[in-house]
Image 1 (spheres, rainbow, N blue to C red):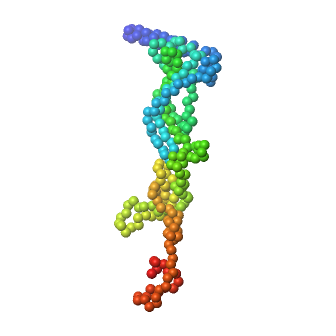
Image 2 (image 1 turned 90 degrees about the horizontal axis):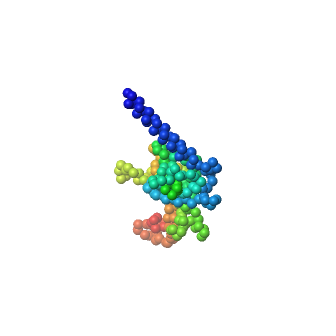
Image 3 (image 1 turned 30 degrees about the vertical axis):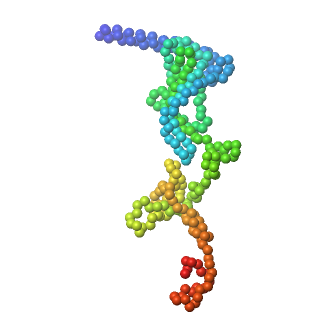
Length: 270
């Protein structure tokens, strides 16, 4: 029992010494006039930050929205001449205390075309700051970033699509809400049943290049890419009517059998 008490006292002494050592190392890191909002550049010059971006994985590519998501591992390295890091500089790389990160100047990394970014800081600390032998600081972090691809017009007043395909983009994909259309029946019981049925257009799919339709018969929403809209059918019929030509010619009344007609006649009416 006495041996256990002596061991416990020894552990308490070692633990207290470690706490005092850590406090002594961290208390004199920041000078009294240190401001984390000011640039750490030498004598008022801009700070130089060296960036290393490693792309671990490309999660998602959305062509319809011109977006893509990536998993990244980022390392930023800089010098802050205002800090007193003599107790951290040694033969090995030292980890900067997590408790002091909130008072430390760190670079703001931004992407011009970024839509959103998430740091993986759920179960373990995501950001680690290390102190190297030369006194430079390095921040290591991993993030999930969603970026937008640029689609702005250039000096020739053309979009990226026009420059790449040498033609203007078409807007035929866009339809009027509530427009009627016909979609094919996936399950046909027999060859005499209709191959399509009438539906109502209600929107676009955000997962693929397809349409959302409402089926009045089953009262369900259908996602289909291949559909024939009513205005396209009517336009096709009108084009067929324009292509037809009418001819007038005489017919003998004594012909057997009689094919007499009065007025205009077309080849389909004989």
